[in-house]
Amino acid sequence: RSDAQSGKYLSNMVIGHEGEVQGLETHPKYRRQGLASELWHAAQQHAEGTPGVPTPKHSVLRTRAGDKWAKSVSGEVPSRQGEFLSARSMQGMIDFKRQ
Image (tube, rainbow, N blue to C red; front, side, top):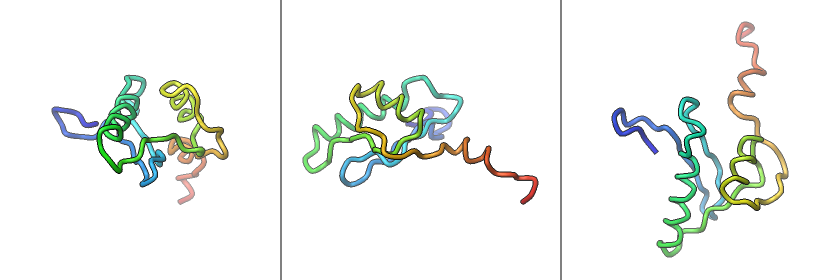
């Protein structure tokens, strides 16, 4: 989803060829406004109306925030089998002063 005035992306989702969500992010200023959920529902509608397009499904690898979001839009989700670190978490682990 992009901003109508600037054309910049506010939220985006990457879905693999089998329907698994491989990535989902929303600009920090626009989080908690339903943008990711809007993308999820649009992807479901697109799959329902387009032969050969798989129905989106949640990955078993999710961040903690991604796990909460997945449960909020779907209720039941596959058990997490691992965890990705968010970009923000990874930045906190890097000592930029020593680079």
